[in-house]
Amino acid sequence: MKENLYNYILGIADNSLILGQRMGELCGHGPSLETDIACTNISLDLFGQVRSYFQYASKISDDGRTEDDIAMLRKEREYKNVLLVEQPNTNFAFTIGRQFLFDVYHLAFLAELQKSTDLTLSAIANKCIKEVSYHERFSSDWVKRLGDGTQESKEKMQEAIDALWTYTDELFHQTEADKAMVIENVGVDVTQLKENYYLRVAELLKEATIEVPESKWFQKGGKEGIHTEHLGYLLSDLQYMQRTYPNMEW
Image 1 (cartoon, rainbow, N blue to C red):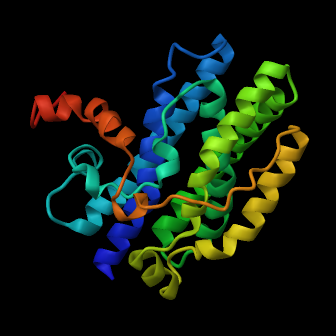
Image 2: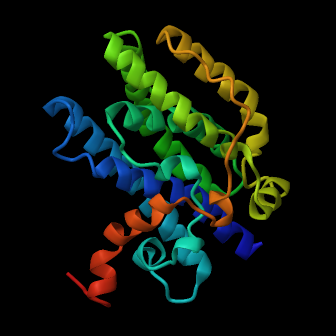
């Protein structure tokens, strides 16, 4: 139970950690000052959520590791995030498309996690859902603006959704820890979120005049620690200070 709960928390938190790092890369590089600040604030929201999860994971592990150790000092194969969130910021349409496809899932997931019999996870979900509700509105609005904007913005938004679509199905795959936590009424049965997720995404893409990709070929592996080449580069930035200056304290 303890090990499964620990791994379950990592599976949730790593998504926010890696996506938060990706969004943080945009600081100073947004298309406008207002949008730049919004993306940076989303990054900060995600890192705030990660702290709550990793503080709990640290308590559960009871082996002396701190939240910082868990966040920064694992090897690439020990991260359990889905492949979607580690995809690079190819351009602003890719950044927004990635955020949108994750936000729709994240909001539905937290709504169910609030019902967890684990009071700590339930409390974290209750706190985070307000932030994620804003994230989903922000990314959805931008998908509509770009999709129903100029011919160039529409093409870029369609290209982004087409390229990122292959990573969406993994959101609904269950690890052994996921299955164990569902049985204990601690975790969320993500398989039950799949149908409504794709309906919601299709509805929003229709408003954005973006076509839903027809491809049924999906990639997976992130939840099991098998990642794309992009994660290694991301971790080299994320972990630099901790690896270069071990045991450093402010």
